[in-house]
Structure formats: structure tokens, C-alpha cells
Length: 80
Figure 1 (spheres, rainbow, N blue to C red):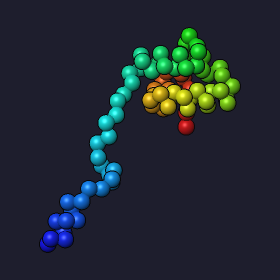
Figure 2: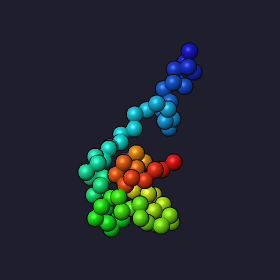
Figure 3: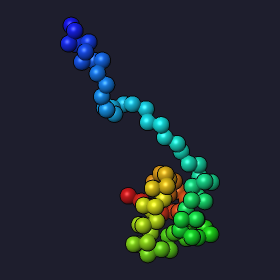
Figure 4: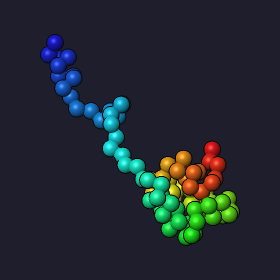
């Protein structure tokens, strides 16, 4: 019984169903992030970028905390 108690008292670094403290960026903020990062005045202008630059921008948007759905919704791109 002592070993059982000791085992369960040990701390570990498991990340099973633990709550992760995350934040969500609203669409107004996300649109500003897209416009500033892509240097455009309309989020839909990202569609006009060549594939390489568009993909770089998508990675940048993700890095800044935007979800794929937000990027799709705000730029009109269909991401798979």
C-alpha cells in the first residue's frame, strides 16, 4: 500500500486531458493581423498572392494565433 501511495504522489509531466490556457483572437483583431502581416488593405487580397507567398502568409497567420477557420473565413481561401 505504501508503494501505491508513493507512486500516485509523484509529480509527472503528462498532458492528457489537462486544460491548456489558450486565448482566442476575435475576427476584428484577426483581420487586422492579416492586413498588417500581408501588407494589404483587404484580407481577401491574400487570394491574389502567388502560392509560395500565400503559404508563407498562412504560416505567419497561424504563428500569430489565428485558427485555420478564421483564415479561411477572412481571406476567402479554402485551406485543406
